[in-house]
Image (cartoon, rainbow, N blue to C red; front, side, top):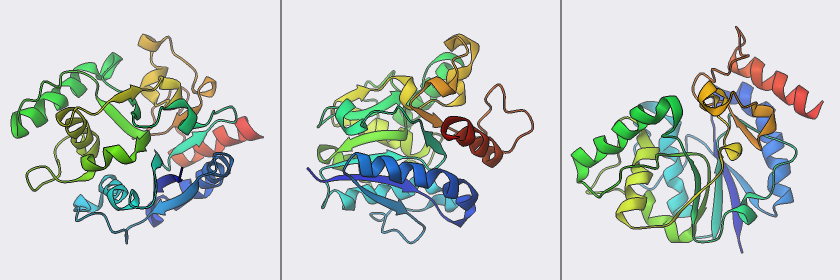
Length: 233
């Protein structure tokens, strides 16, 4: 079984990646996987790197599945906690492992995005299960989702997450819902989720502005640095 861990990065996020990539590499080695950073020069399966967004570089996975059987995508603005299990063992082969984001304070907004793409591309009966691919485990059988639909990639709200969600449901591919502990964004530290501490999760994800309750005036880089120090000493 050929395994790969990928992340996306360029010089714009180098202050973050010099903190997080050594940890991702450490776990990649433990999981007997290769490691790859998808940069701005990536061959992205004819995708547009729309307005310089990192999102669309994930389309390179289409080509990488020529070599690998399973790929774990882990965003560069994440910290893998020391107790994180092997993601390839948690998610069954052939299933798309990912968390759902249409919960709590984001439920209505994410459900609108789910309906938005179907107004544009056709109703496929997708109503719930908005995925966040910041931490996702993907098998070769999912390769088709990285292709364009009717000659285009979705460039509306939600970007590639919405594109993949549509493709997964259109193609009737099985999704394995990961527990939110595997992708703990600030939304999961809100009161609706009992103000859960990110430090109790396997993967801490500083997506967007990372508005965790204790962020204060710290920058995202400073917060990641402080959290790494707290976890790893």
